[in-house]
Length: 166
Image (cartoon, rainbow, N blue to C red):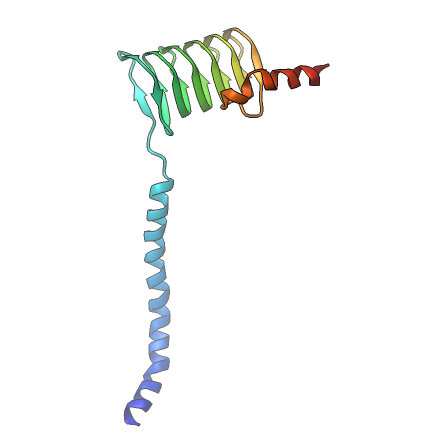
């Protein structure tokens, strides 16, 4: 009984003591959880291919790439930035494509942006596009709901687009 009364009396005191400790305890794991959750959510920095680099072959990543050099081959990425000094000879496929340099080949992207320094020789297949004044572009532009999927992008979506225009 003596221990029961002691347990009951300190119980509220421990609860009061636990209340300040309880917010401190969840506050401590919350930043840890925030750090743990932000670590996977935080994207790694873009891979940069410097201006003195010349690559022959295809590049594929789920991350971001910034190209300043020369690539002879296809590139697939999440965000692709083509620098002013860059030259790409091949097909470019990305969710977001920002072209400041030169591309010779097809461009596929959900969002495609040609800046005033861009030079593109090839077709652009996009969901949304922006072409700044001063950009040089030779080729055709085709809007598709799913431009990243070349299988759907071919003849199947070209005919419905023509039918919609008529």
